Amino acid sequence: MALFNNLLAVYGAASVYGSEIPLTAMGIVMKVNQIMLSILVGIAIGAQPVIGFNYGCKNFHRVKRAFEVAIAAAEIIASLY
Image (cartoon, rainbow, N blue to C red; front, side, top):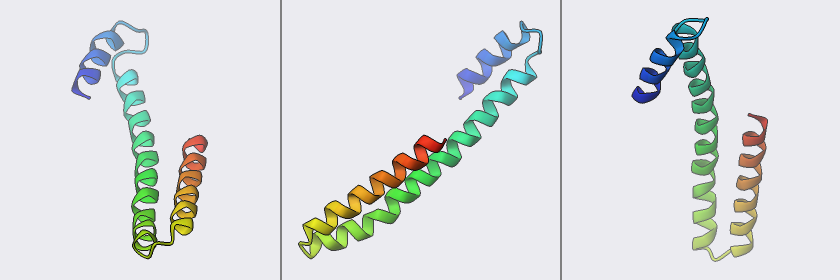
């Protein structure tokens, strides 16, 4: 991130917009990316107890179904962003 900030400050200053606009745009993109990543990690953390419990009970069809639901939810969220 420090490298990106330094590069954007140097090369952004050469643009007609100045160095503030590229830094601001990068900050906005990184915040949106962080929100998406947090949602995806939340889906993974939420699915883990369900998958672990059913794996311990040897309900492998429920493990597979829970995994498929978690993957589908993550794919939908990732494609929306």
